[in-house]
Length: 419
DNA sequence: TCTGGGGTCCTGTGCCGC
DNA sequence: TCTGGCGGCACAGGACCC
Image 1: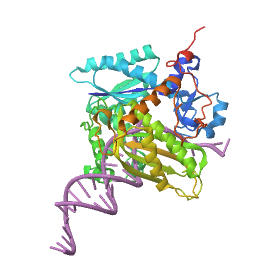
Image 2: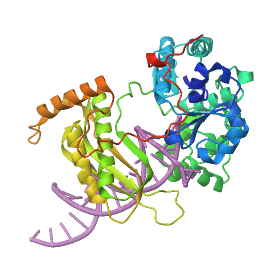
Image 3: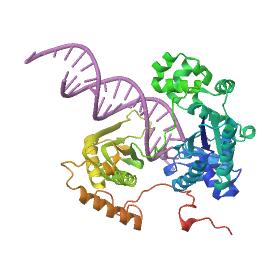
């Protein structure tokens, strides 16, 4: 059996742990730059504030209903997530951390009663030790565990936040009651496709012929169908911690058109990206750079240019990576256009320890030492104190974070004081 | 005025060498 | 020597997730 454990309204719950007077009050958490709503407490949900909506459109509703608004504090959420995950691992060894607020668990060789009991214990312990409420869905496949989790959460009063799909009639009943768009793996495009042929519920979906699903929704769609039929096609992936790509991308506060400005941004992204690379002891061999217009602007002139290139060797040096990224940028840049967002993605990641020496990297030892001292200085005096010449020396990230909460758990200066 | 960032996987296409 | 067919590969783009 698979269980999916999910933290309820995770970011909002994290904020609430440290401000208990906000219990029962509507809370929203905004994305970087205070752009979109990315988390809502139940009270905020019932005010009709949608997920992912631009915050400025709801400013009035926030004020009228005294909604507590927070800028995202990922340091805090990341730390709270680690705490929750380590508690879960005390109960069961097979854990796949799926996202910051979700994990799949695999129960093998336990009786049904034992599993139920363990799930309830996990819910209780996580709440007691961290203050974060969680829900658990249990089922024979991962996709059905997602469905079960939804039910556990939606009817938490009756389910006590735990629901199990442990027989066929429960499976059918759940699928009949779930909207097609609420199934894990069905996005907007597939929903459109399915509604067109009259598929509205999960049950309608599993009633389709396999060939249709394969043809119209690829192998992924077919795997999903099998999962919902109770045949497991997705397994627990442990140790997924090592990433296959590392992206650093940002929207700009204003549109940019000069090459120099873009070079400055791309260099900064390259520096940030290579630092992430070094932190997980990896190197990259492929770099992708993109620049794009504002997709929300009301004209037809929308563009997105990207270019991917392979380095002649693997590296995690900020200098090599930014040099190469700028080369790519120059190839896709065209004068006279305006850009609103850019990014760099590092791919072809390999462990630093497997480094293949090549003719080109005579400099490698020198670069390694240099990066080590840069990281050392940054760790001592604060992030990104050392900058490359092509970065703007005065510029600091102008991220808009007007409503940032404190780093209660990761910075001793900001710890909660009880008077 | 103000619309996030970071991932994964799959598929179509074009090119290359056999 | 030329050509068609085919597999493998790289790459771009699309779809999904949180």
